[in-house]
Length: 65
Image (cartoon, rainbow, N blue to C red; front, side, top):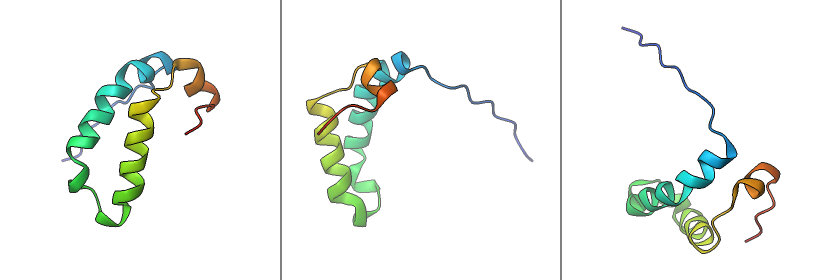
C-alpha cells in the first residue's frame, strides 16, 4: 500500500536551529554509515561542530571550513 507523505521545506532559521541536534545524531550513528565515506563524514561533523552556520550563512553558502 502506498502512503502519501507531505514534506514541507524548512526555512534557513529552522535549519540553523536544528543543525546542532542533527549533527549530534549523525555523530552517534557515524559507524552505521558506509565505511568508504567515514573520513569525509567525520570531517564534516567536526567542521559543523566547530562552526555552526547561522541562517544567513545557510542562505548564501558562505560557511568556510
